[in-house]
Length: 495
Image (cartoon, rainbow, N blue to C red; front, top):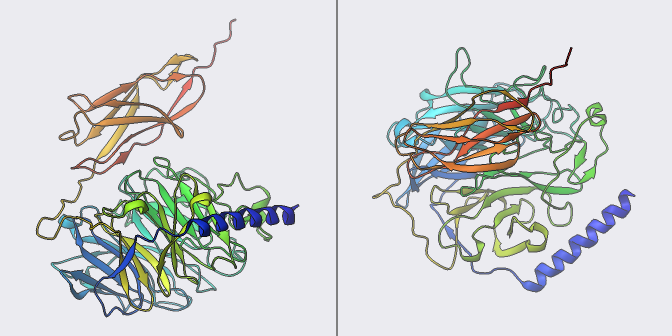
């Protein structure tokens, strides 16, 4: 049966590929070199308040600042960074308030032992550099036995928390059985707030497994093999994950805002792509349900290691706008698809980067492609991109929070509950829309009144979990509330 399904899948893929080839590539995009002289670059991002200040991450442990055509050293972590196996300084994420705080966060593998451990740490910039003395470690994640499958991405989510991707620990079929183990931080997307809390160097947000016995409270989603790159759509807030496959399939996983895959199990090592996978992990006997990929392609065939990218939202990108851009390490072609119909719209953009190892996005939404051989390119459309410049930088968004409460946590079955949402700070939020969600379903949208509150009256027929969300505006970040549970009262028995 599996062979029949696999054959059908390959036929479907071949038809899709023929359709893409017959229609040709978009052909309107081009590659523009940015800076130069980089040594093994592996990631690029920008100052959140100034898209023309780029941070180019070099795998050996250095960060270069590119500004006004000049390349200059920004930070040097090389005394701490090991490049053994697939390790190195793999990404950075400036804080949303970087302009005020100077904080940025780094993901690297350390020299303390072999194979190297994963570190997530904070640096604080002073002027145009971030001294090593400012380093503050947040996480140290053991990675025993093997030096591959580290993951490596840091991104701030639309609700202001820091998301971290980790690989399963390496080897074939996850021999350490980490990806399905909620007690392990490997093979996961982790979520934390980087401010200290009590004795911890970070704060644990409202993550899905905080109250689960034996689970690590930082686990956000799991069942991933090597999610080297993931991103958030800066228009919708949706989460896109490029998870590197093993022998058969490279996959793209998707999680919509505002849930963002909270608690999702993406299947590895029980599954690879949509297929069952032969593994010795006993958890696969009871694991599931699994969240399947929205897109995959065969390995070998179309590539060997997916490089996850971004949904194109930058100016001047023509018909590339709104498409998910991705590539493959072994092929180097830049491809894209429309999120609503990935297989039917997958196409080659007519662009090729040797040793393509990452994409990047600046705070204007412009996209970049990184070659491990040295060049860093900006992806340009036919029209020029008009973005804020260093002389008129955008202002970093301020953090905001949204709260939610019920007049009563228990109501008569099929009666309505009174739920109030509010936002803080209030200044600049009056009249902004707030949306109430029941699970993954949108209940309705209201606007904040003069005291920044809004009320909803959903009908309660069963136990329901609600959240409230607000989108970003010109001043504040987007925000999502804690979970609020409302349930129907039990009927009283007549005596």
